[in-house]
Length: 85
Image (tube, rainbow, N blue to C red; front, side):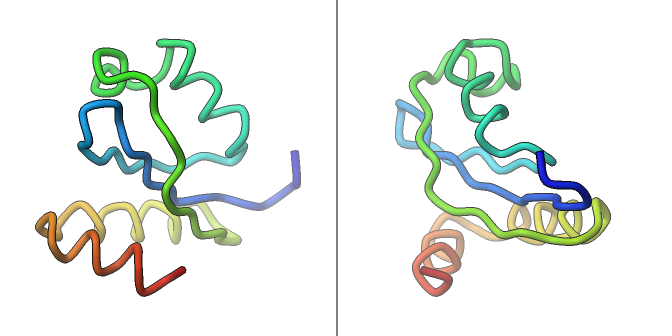
């Protein structure tokens, strides 16, 4: 694991919905989600696939990005993901 890296990430769930979160170990976190041991939201919506991620140097920055993303409606979330590609 790289030290002092925090990630805001967006997953697409098996039902087409989005899940946003943060972690300091992106690969491990996605594996945990797909093992059914991640967030309660994703457990019933497997499999999940990484759609988007951003790297930050602090946990608070990653949490702020997650919070801002969650305030958007579906259309704006899709625009955000596309804009950053």
